[in-house]
Length: 344
Image (cartoon, rainbow, N blue to C red; front, side, top):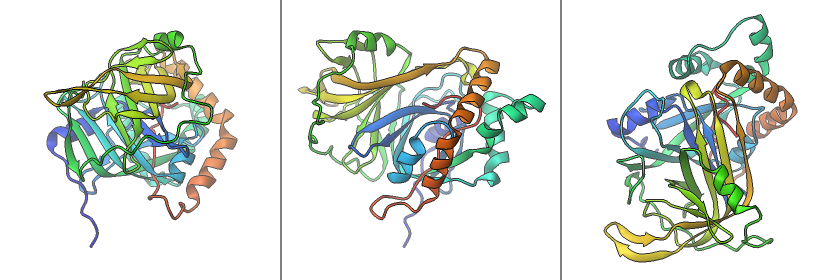
């Protein structure tokens, strides 16, 4: 018999429908994770147990990664400028499916976008300039397999688990061939990771990314020191991703910074909610990000330019997501949302 859709309570639903942005985590062939910000704009189907987002084929490589391994996680981590004031942090782990030809969803998606981010810009110039950005879009639908729910946005302690129990973290994998030491200036990276909203992710025991909230980031001796109140951090070393971002209303005025590297968390004395962990040590290997000024016109001009510049990559991505998923991989998934610029 088919597995019934995962059901979630009203307080979780209020977060899924109201958040303006979410952190998307997907896995890499090397066993690591990537974290980027997307705009889910309330896309979800409670009866089917799915959540979603849309993205332009011309922005980023995430669709190719998702097509290769559709296990993803969406972290709904802040109510800032959203449509809900429900407290909590929600992480949905699930299997993503990319729908390359999703014109049927266009009107529904636009309605959600306008509700969360204001009217879509139209006119002779804008229709021509944003043609690639809007028409080369796909819907990504994630079938929820497990939901991690913390009652506060800090993500303190252990979460409530909806669905299958959270498996134990896998044993520490083999270190990268180039070593685990930092390859970037940690003092400079600590300053660049100051935006208000931070998330930390790694690959869990069943292959799905695990995402937790992160506190302050500071520079240590050759590593970034990342605080997190979550008690599900895996001890030992492994690949991890850190995302810091902030934004104004309607996702205008974006600032995003991400770091990929080698994470080590060391268990300390037991506390009331389990073993206490000292700040996570993250040796950054790769970093990137972007800044968009708090001006909607400039943001849309940039979105149109990037989509056109990446049109060839978009066509490759369309071919990749249209191809059958590898036999060993789980089913594929969708991603993103028009006129957001909230994607790396």
